[in-house]
Image (cartoon, rainbow over all chains, first blue to last red; front, side, top):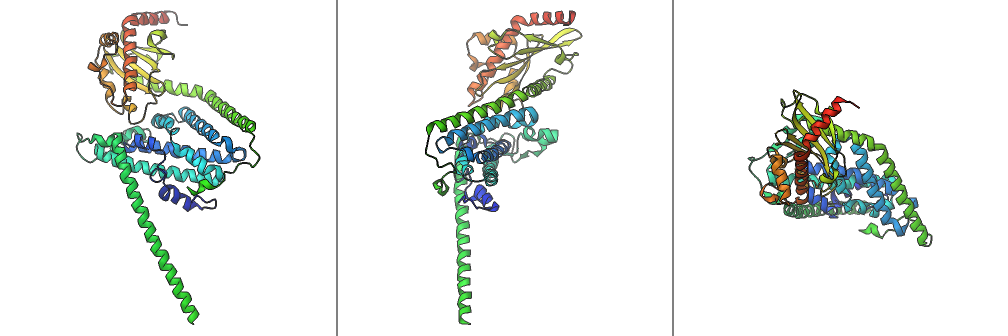
Length: 243
Length: 224
């Protein structure tokens, strides 16, 4: 896992599936549980996290030559907090409409331990390219878990999908963005438990269990494939020796 | 995780605490410098963006035929930071109909939010009735405190139609809001910050709106 020579597809497999930051490492649960009540919120936080973890991973890796063992964590904290602050200022200055949508999620990212964990466990031990890719893959994995939670909680909690889409896509689509919302039941339907934090815990538990099951099935499956391949090659070599 | 067993790529020199401390101080100073430079260079743009946002929002707050001037150009600075408990500048946008006062829209900032400042617009008609309240910027918790945005919930609508005298009266009752206004569940601090700010500006309006209009007339008489 996380071997220096890992190739690209392995980084993605690690980040999205086998070592998913939210479902396996259980990192960054505070923002994950708080902000996954609707799909639109999940998209906002997911994008903001993806951007930040990629940037901080790259920066931490680039600063490896001057890192010192004794003060590395403090340096990571400075780098992460500085990056997040700079991102927010630049966004508010140059991408004001996007800042109006994602702005409230950015301060929340500082509390996401996923970013510090990747800096310590990966970026500080690998070259810039590998660290950036790891940030991208881990950020995507986190975002996918967030989207899944957001979609499930919104469907059960509000019986809609992409409610308040105008807040996120209004800048590009104008009033058409409202049409993105999918209504699955009447307007009065609310299952409050699932839009509040307890619902987030329930859904997260179920998702973690489902994800384990998926990984196990995959492993058994690939195990059988390996066994079959081994027995086949044994048969082939045995038949070669006979001839 | 197995990769934790790997040694991070740091130098192998013997630990020398002063060097590490100096390095940390250097990195912190550098980060501070970069943030300062970015803050300095983006300050004007951010200010303009926020101003534009206020003006955009302003247009949608007043009833269409209740004014015939451009309130964005008809402004008076409000000088009562003590009473309004804010360190930021407060501006009054004046709307008139055929030269007569129609409404005042106050742009103010409250520092009582759960996370950072909350920018507010409060429109009060000449009759003393609150027309609308809007949030122009905030950093409250997504999914909880962000319900103060007009686009996310109709919480702000409860102020429309309330008379400024009632808001003011409630202010004197020392936060006995519960009977009068809904709070957002899970976001008591956020809700209180907005309600208190609206109450303070309502009180200010009761006492000083006549002064504001007079000030505006003086400005018109002798433009600076």
